[in-house]
Length: 200
Image (cartoon, rainbow, N blue to C red; front, top):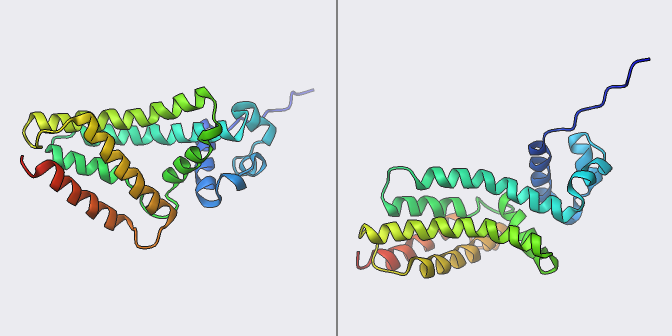
């Protein structure tokens, strides 16, 4: 008697990509393990074995998305270009493409649930945000050292710039009327001109 063949589990990346797409389209509240399982051909029990909870699924999906963005960010920031050109590329990558941008929808869901998150989840979220911050600090410091930017404290400036980017990005991601991606990039560009180039 032959042993029945087990259907191989789909690659983790396929599961996370499907989860990201479903969260962006429907929101986390409407995502169920059963629906995700149907999408990828797995049982909800099998998914729960790997992810345990929807919160863990959400965080792993965000980490997977950030791995891809981190590779793209590294490519943009190490290319041969002026500090301002690389800063513009950083901003372009940071700001969502539009309403319900999948990556930013993930972030909004994570922030929304972070009040009740455990220490491990908070540490993992902080690690993601820390990578964006460190890259921005290094880029600003490089621009200052090469006198492309006026003298600023790179860490303080990066903190303020990311707060500005977060605020604008939330408006774009939720589809706030009158706050589209092009308008936001224009505002941020003017801010950088006034803040970093005035005395360079």
